[in-house]
Length: 374
Image 1: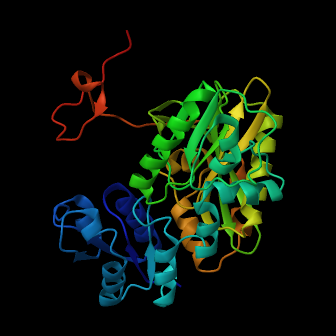
Image 2 (image 1 turned 180 degrees about the vertical axis):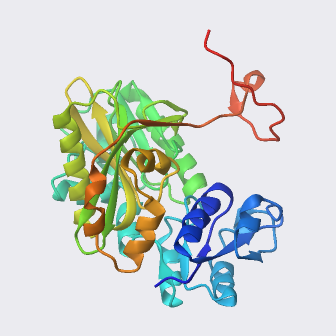
């Protein structure tokens, strides 16, 4: 049983995990940087450990300091939250090697889904629908692209038609993503995507796939017990986006036929079973309303920012489920959680500067006003 849990994160998600821990009688430990010392999540924990420094690289990304903090406070479990080290297999291994309970999937599952190229190969083998995917070496000869990965034995696809989408194999959030509508533009866009991916994720590997016009982003929430059993908790529609970042999340997804929803859920179940998934995770799909076909995009091996809409609709506490699975509990007790009740929407607010091409801005929020319709 988990007695004292450290959250290796900050702010909203730390507070969210602490709330569930309080209801379960689990003691909590916060970590914080210099800049975050006065934030509410620090006061909400039973104990708090100061990590000297203000930047993430000095604090929330320091595996050694986080493990030391867990040991010093007597924590016996670590929850990674979302962002920072939440999908870092080395961090998960370090937590387990320290004799602590890792609240998340196995390091092997994180590794398997960490590369979008490898993840698609695994999903294809599991019978999950995926779009055709080409790497730089496979597509290079068709458009005159010359990359270090290209070889004389490269397989050339029989036909490549625009529009295409260039994507980074590691990471997400729209970085390294380019829509290409003319084949002659593809080499330059791949080069730009590689540079951006290398800068953002330390891995410049990209791939190319068909771009589905007017496709919808629909993702399915799953919880696995790490022994092949996977519970599906409905779907969320995250199609309203800005700069490839989600703005509105809605559950259940609107305008899905029962057959399509059932097929999405079954595909997500297969995805989780394929890697013996443990804990809460999200399987993301691209849905084409015109053909009613859908394709695997990626799997997020962590709790998502938008998890509350699923909790509201299905009447569950996903953090509680994470903790239960980490303690070795099965999924039988949650079997009734599959039926949705009602509807939930989450909206993210963005601060942008209209005088600078509406680029995202940061700073102190001094006024917040919601205007009535019309």
